[in-house]
Image (cartoon, rainbow, N blue to C red; front, side, top):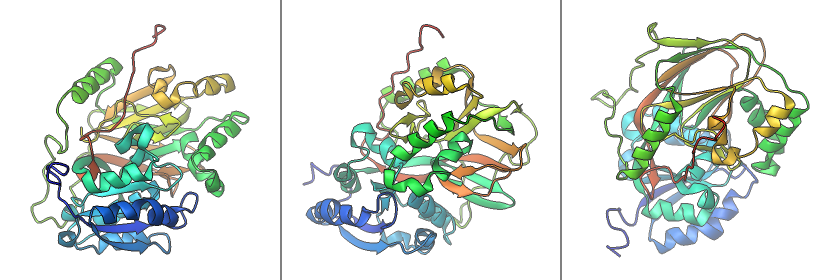
Length: 380
């Protein structure tokens, strides 16, 4: 037993949060038949809570007792993870709450975090995810503060405007299709391509793709990175989130205002099984990967699908791929969608800033379980 769980606490105390309505609506069945037997075999002590309405998981996380829970298990998609992290942020001791590891059991439409933690082969496997619950080790991950109209929230996965916001939000009625609804929405948009107008300001970071690739190779060849090498300075009393460093900063920004197809910013290579949008993303480097896609013809949009699941969009022309610690988006049009971690937010101006290693998940490998082969094509 000790050898099998070397360096890992056994018989963990779990809070299992199940969204019975998410994705295909099979979360409760998946837990009872595939996850619960594994937890019982590992002699875990767990309490199961079923969410009853939107925001329920947020309330649960905001009232949690950090000293009584080893892991919070989410049986759902990425939406419940978003609620849990924001619930921790509203806790009376948010920094202590954010150190509680979250472990996703994939039961939603996108399951982006699960794909990144377990890999494309096991990212939809609930048994593999359950094994991560009992044997994974805490790993620090970056999250972003999202500031909009004076209200602050946290994002762990992605922020998007333009086409990539339309896809999850305009296909919510097709959740029964699972992750296929995103591809369906993309193909429908091929029939009616459009341009979007935004003013996008990016804090100076990294724009050299070859340098990004070298940094990724160095990272993956080194020892596992369960803890962020250098967490940002945090308040000692644990009762407040870290301050925003660049919200009022006016130096060292680059602004883009050309028409675009979409902006997508995120942490973690995969946003769905069909799209590795951020192939050089790592869990806790203090940077968010930012992809700004210029306008495309129908033919170009169709070609962009080829190799998207392996990160091929990284090298494509007519796109900016940047790493940054902060960015701002201001719409130059009246209507549109804003998606944060796949959830609908009010369409309007927002500011985003990275907090290095602020939240915690469980990982078997100490890095994203993603194999990336990003050799530049000969035409580049």
